[in-house]
Length: 462
Image (cartoon, rainbow, N blue to C red; front, side):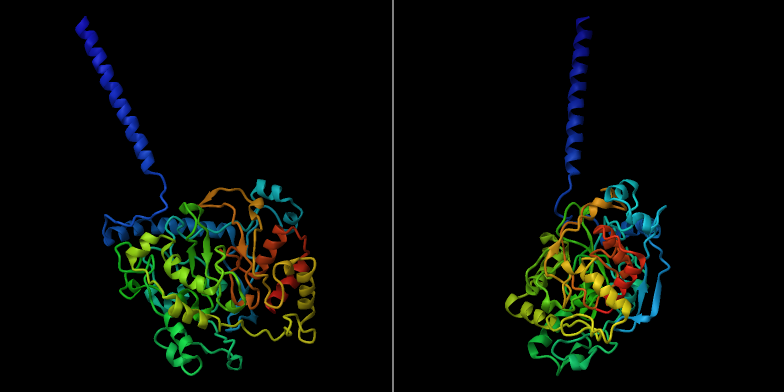
């Protein structure tokens, strides 16, 4: 009997020990799942294994993202051939946002709380095509011109109708008499000298050379965790791959300064036109000079803000006193497109403008309160504002992205805005009409349909 009791006690002790060990192992495993600020710098798998894993999920995630876009937007977007960008491409016309069981007029009468509770807000934050993956992603129109930028694992998600010109015009503050210097040519390392020699001084010309030179980046480099097959893509990307001809092609990325991954914001490439009049750079980073921005992009943003990844993948450390200086000296020459209907104060010339544009300008400066942030002549106040759009939607996960608060966003200049669709920092507003609808709700302006139309007409004249 005593032996049996002893065995029972021994069995119980062993069981308890095993249970404690199992719990400890489970706790340790859970601790191992804690999200780190750092990426997996030292890979234990090959390029072929990484590629196979990415391709295995590509179709499913692309389908989920397409379903989200189709639920939110009318993807059959119209363009008005009578209204064109400075490069000649027709401007898309909206609004394109889909409303579920409500009209714009009904939305206008609802409070932010009512819109939030019923899930009616049509302009929620926009996820990246595969938000858990992220990285630089280029539109098809750019890949046709620069196939080295093709990723094997992801395809761009926005239709070409809502993107800028594939080859935007270039205007120089120093030579406005030349008009479009690019003349339909995509500026690359192969032709920059031919196009700009004789127009720029030697420092500016060297700065432009650096802007069209490939340097390693998170997805485009020679390591096993790259996202490109092409040998030339392994060399990296250039500044002008996203900021095509000093403007933008709307290439998309995720901001590098937020963790964990699901809270990172999608960011669409802004135009570099008019950086000479700007005092903040980056949609949220509030970098104080274009020199800071140029250096930051190469050192950090190219590598998702991960300094370990930057070291592994071959970060190009720019020399501040010459290289950065030369690059920014060229960038400061990029001008806004001509606006023939504006006078020297950036206001409409009454002899040139239509009645609708003039009514829109009055709304812009009055009832719509746009001028409080977007003041003439360049239509920016060079600061940041928090629109608190989260008043209108619930914080929830959609396709790998947590739709949380946006926080403060810089006031982008509105000069030449018709050349830069889609709008807001993540492209959630496809057209200027969508942008007007967005701010009508956010600011609770209660604009009439005719007033919205006039406001969009004024914006296209800037």
